[in-house]
Length: 272
Image (cartoon, rainbow, N blue to C red; front, side, top):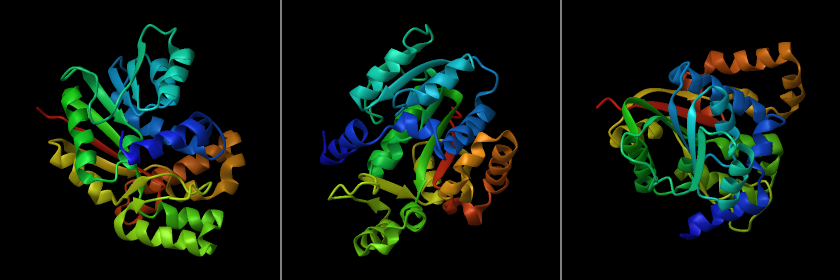
């Protein structure tokens, strides 16, 4: 495995509880908004869904609840084991360790492919396009590929929200991130993420197009609320939660504001 892959694996094996992040606090906003967008395109189902980079199954779980058949693929063995422990008793669920650039599935075997993570851990464009191409190979004609990216400006906004930006070393990281998209955390500073690539919205479109897919839309996931940690308790109240969700929906497709959202979703379709 490359040094890039080693750093990513160490981050998720020892430093990050991805499942807990999405099920608690402000991370729930990301989870719920991803559900909204994905459900627009999957419909009532049942569908065959490939959950690429699916971690320990936080998305697979609700997809199964929506009556879909799900195969999860993840690079981290610990994630796959946790997903099997939690969901392995469901007949419609399977999981395997694998690389998003070389998916362990047959051609045109899926109705939808979700890539909710791998793109932002591959710094070389050729690798990211390879992920898109593999997803395009795996999905059936007419099916959708929905991929997530981190915004080019994520470290800048997060640096303000978390006050890391007042550290000169972090400002140097941000300078590189904004200029090139290539994020590094060579000293493993807590809260500074791991080796990553941060996209401009138009880059996602270009990568999907180069892989032979037709892009349907690119949307911002959380909007500005994704940086406002003090809103997390609001999500516990039904009325307040809807206010926050509606704020994200209202600007999700506004081109001038896409880069403000922590995460972007690009929806593409295989037409032949």
